Length: 320
Image 1 (cartoon, one colour):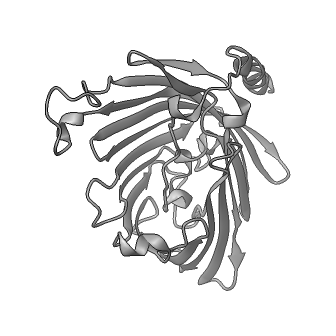
Image 2: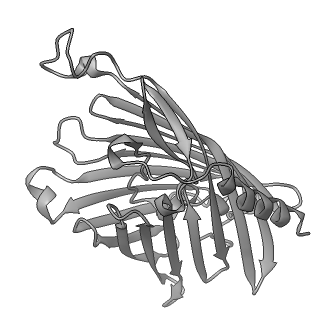
């Protein structure tokens, strides 16, 4: 029963010791970063690999996000995820991919996911592991005013393929959920001549924590409050995202709510429709109330999720 946990524990204890931490300066560090999502409550695999299999069905999700509308070269983010429990219901497998373009840079992330579930305290505790790579490519020829030869932009930046792994824990039952994840164990730096070097440094870890619950007001109305915190041990980053969310669920069909992103002073409007017991479509709009209000018209995000399988039904809706 605990073989999967032992394997994950052994791997996690061994992996950080493969590469020793080094005090590289900030200018040589390659920042992978965790992109901002607003629809993470409906696509939990993008922030935590332990979410895999939690919907008790083959679940797929597509999302499209336009960040900072009206700003030239602003990030455009597309994400795809799928995950499913296996036959014994303890093991789950999944895959997630992210494609992003910002300015003259294009990046992609592709990861496979493994999760192991244990029944406990009226719910399930899941251990998740992801492994894959981040890929980044910058084309300086797209910059205005650059002519060859240029002493700074001598040539296009090489395409980086950066292998990595991450880990997560996730507990859930019919009334609440809580999870914490480490998106990446490895960091990277430029070592000169267009080459990169991997290293491990605990002080560069990011931790993503999210939790929430379900409050039944009546047979037709439910409340779903939640919170998300993205915290880094790096002195220059620390708290990079802190969201407080509230959703009202009407007749298990309409989900309407809002979030306040304390970091960045952003208000987020959320609206989702459970079109069928299997299909959900959602939209969110981020309104910048802080300094970005002068430079951006906000951000929009669309999501479409479909759950396959007979376990998903109107009599057995899934809120997490």
